[in-house]
Every structure is written in C-alpha cells, then in structure tokens.
Length: 227
Image 1 (spheres, helix red, strand yellow):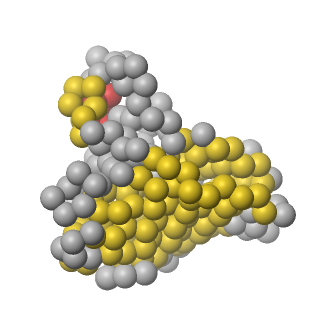
Image 2 (cartoon, rainbow, N blue to C red):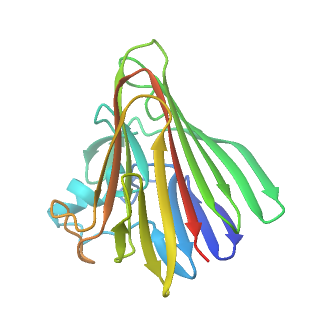
C-alpha cells in the first residue's frame, strides 16, 4: 500500500495481493481511497454479511471500486466466496515524492489472461491542488476492445455539472471531478442516485466511462478541491 498526505487531499493506494484463501480480497486493483477536506470521496464501501448475496455479486467485484474492466472482464476471475482464479500481479514502477505530494505508477497483469492480452498501467499524481488518475490500456495483438472505467462515489452529495464533470460537496466545500478518454469516442454515464446497486450504506452516485471498438485508450480523471 501507498499513502500520500497532500492536505486537503489524502490518498491511499491499495495494491495488496491475495493472501491465505483470499476470502477477504477483492478485484479492481490498484484501488484508490481518496479523502478531500477530511471526508471520503472514493474508496472501499465495505461489505454486508458474508452470507448476503451482494457480497459476491457486488462488494468483491472490480466495478465496486475505482477500477477498469475490459470487455466486461475484471482483473481477476471470481470462482467462489473464498477463491479467485488468476489474480493479477501488480508491480509499482514509480513512487516519487514531489514538493507537495507524490507520483505513483503500477503495472497490472490482470488482463493478460484474455485471448487478446491487454496491458494496463495506472498512474496517479497527487498534490495539494489536484489528484490526477491516468489509466492506460493497450491491446497486445491489435484487437478492438470495450474499455470501461468504474468510479463509485462514497460521498452522498454529488451532482452532474456538464457532460464530463460532476461536483461533490464535502465538509461544506466543493470538489470537482472531471473525466475524459483520449482515444475513441467516450460514452459516459453518471448517475446521481444509482438504482441498480444497493449497498448497506444506501445508494451512492456512480460514474462509468466507456470506450468501445478501439485497440487502446487512456482514461483521465482530475479531482480538484475548489477554493
């Protein structure tokens, strides 16, 4: 794990591999936990009781975290409540301090198991002014894919503010979230109150950005505390 304190932004990067029988592990690595102004914006929503159907159907899946998927596939295959098949190997390729934060990069093998393997790298640059998340995905054999970025918010008050921007209210202050895809035509769906996903903490706003029919793409998300 990596922790960055760039007040008013606080970041935790969860890159933990499976351990033991993996009953407590979840897909969607590296997962980002983000606090702004002392309140959580993105993170792990926890889980209900282990005998709750949502445990396997949602809480342990990649889309329940700040993660990407390729053709609907996650970075690990969910076999049972206590077992994953072919979990990813993550390598931290960069971790450098900056004057007011840090820059971190991870490479994941999570999509190498596909018929057309896909290389995946997540770059994160955190400073006092903004948090930049850059997810790079590239086909190894040149086949087209459907790439999706999933971002469930834990903040309750998040409102759309244009086609590629939303604004969250945390501790009485505004935090802007902007997104784009640098290759292909992106289709973004932002729901202020998702009805398809129930959680023990109630429904939460959810962002999904999709790019289809391309060999590679780059998702870019900027989170900025507004003055």
